[in-house]
Length: 228
Length: 242
Image 1 (cartoon, rainbow over the protein chains, first blue to last red):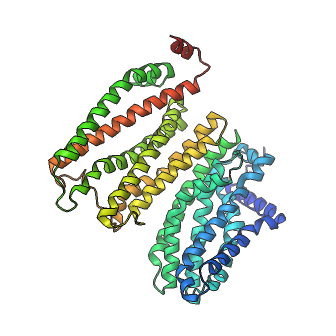
Image 2 (cartoon, rainbow over the protein chains, first blue to last red; image 1 turned 45 degrees about the vertical axis):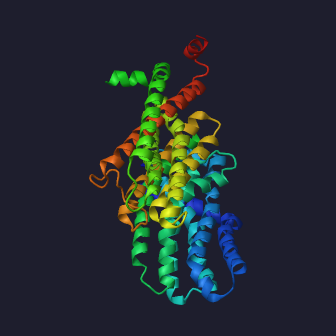
Image 3 (spheres, each protein chain N blue to C red; image 1 turned 180 degrees about the vertical axis):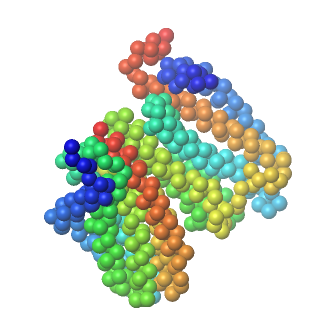
């Protein structure tokens, strides 16, 4: 009898597999970033290209665009694995499903959430955000996209096997991530106005801790229902 | 006690008991709401600050309390259904969701009508109002998820997980007037001494009436759910043919 691999090795195997699969279809993986760039382009065209006005709405625009972009990506989280049966293998593998889902969500975040954070300074600068605020904008999105991935992961798991579940995933995720949007946009806004964003950032961090610790349990329960 | 509980959870027994109790619930609810409305709209003195306009309180507050109470009931029933695989518990959650959604919509609408003369605006984006709106979205998401499965068992269990997740919103609504500086006033109904008794008793009547109304509608809808779920069972044919 061979020794069972440790939790870390199992987790990292899931993580590496998901990343490898995603990089083989990189056209799909860059879609959220392209979407973010396009939505951010719409606002100067629709509102006005005047710097002062753009700066006023920049935090909200950036956050809403990032939120919608990561909602778009949620569809890829479990769908392919569900269709080809590998999700069933994960459920049957005997390893704690909540633990495995943490790594699946982390891989998903690395592919779809992290690029949003990385391009956010470019988008923010185009919306006339001062350079001094870019670090806080990035930090708020770094924490926020994490919350979105975990909460959205639960919604994606719940809608497994639903035909045309795209809209439904958004309807389920949005009410639950509104607090993150409030604190995240507030933090970015405070930084743009040159004030300390410590308070909302800490609350955002608390939300991240909460969602990282609770969402995997919900994801695991939902996956078990989904693969039955 | 436990045998009684188990018996109640069996569909045929429940179907019979519910049929017997619905009239009692309905009458009690009707009488209490009538008394509450008369007391609230006619007998209670006008508010020293808000004048006659405060009377919408008698609809707004019970709806708002019920909107949260129904969600809590739904989530607890959903959890019971998930943990102990009780079929009737899932039916309770399924039957509660539309009722709760309407109570939430009612609380939002009456609050908006109340807000216009008192605050000068239909809507403000403050914590209490926003979190109540999120509650409405949660109900709608629950109904959407439930309706998107063909298989009843999967619909039951998936929507139950969602109901349990959504319960994080309830404390946020309840404490939103305490945690944040809100334009929405704090709780007066449940704070002793915040309201004279002439204003208070109609509100308590209305609250009890609304709760009984929920019970009555819940049982009517639950009987419908039981019929839908047990449609091929022999006992149901016997009951319905009789």
